[in-house]
Amino acid sequence: MILLTTYHLSHGYKRFSLFHRQTYREVLKDITLNIHSGESVALIGQSGCGKSTFAKTLCGLEIPTVGEVIFRGRTTKQMNQRQRQEMRRHIQMVFQDSVSAVNPRKTIRDIISEPLRHLADMNKEQQDARISELLLSLDLKPSDMNKRPSQMSGGQLQRVCIARALALQPELVILDEALSNLDLVLQIQLIELLKKIQQKTGTAWLLITHDLRIAQRFCERILVMDQGEIVEECKPGATAVFEHPASIRLKDAILPPLPTMVTQA
Image 1 (cartoon, helix red, strand yellow):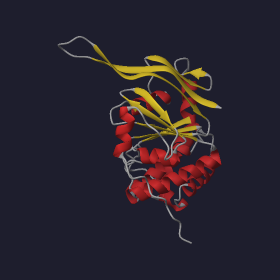
Image 2: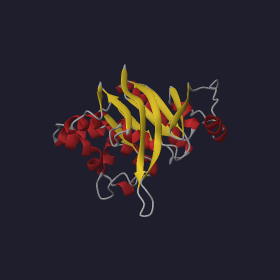
Image 3: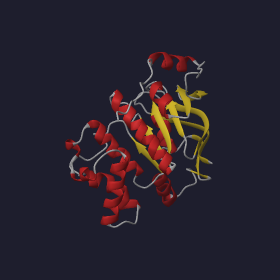
Image 4: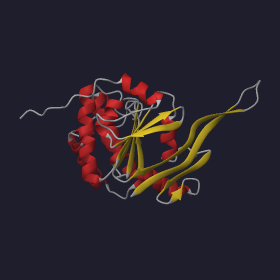
């Protein structure tokens, strides 16, 4: 089932200057694609190609200049405030910098319960039960909810941000370079955890990254963006063939592949 569609989507920003006329810089160019329920899609591309702007248009933080974002049969341009809030409940984002994404004065309980307090009808006991469930699903301890961000490692704090995104059981989670700041072992461990969560909940993942290794290991479909356009689509695997110059540059830049984790008995 198609969860979200973009139809001939283009977007850009106006520039103003004291001495020059107003100019327009196009960031996204004529993007049409579908994301299906329960699938994992990777959007790869070099820094500055428009990946993060595209993510913001998908979750309604940016309204496209041209074209449509369609979620559950309704375009973001047609949505009223209540409908936008409902859309944001079902489409969540996790950002690259977990430290700046949380309030250092809050406990982990407060951080994860934020969407539960504002968008769900739960009492405190129900919220704590949901937080414990989320922490366990990401290999953290329920007792961690009493800690503050400074008491967590970088990998643990990123898992907290993912737990917050999953709190309302969204249909799509956008991981905007969310694995890039982690070391190799943590990347592999977190990928395996996200796969298990997907199998259990049916959550769709959109992984935005510049690292083809992560995309190959995690996703069922890989999209390549270059200068605001989707220039290539490929299935992951050793037989994947890339023809566009941007795709080839990325492929050459990320060898060797991620190693396989071995669990000791």
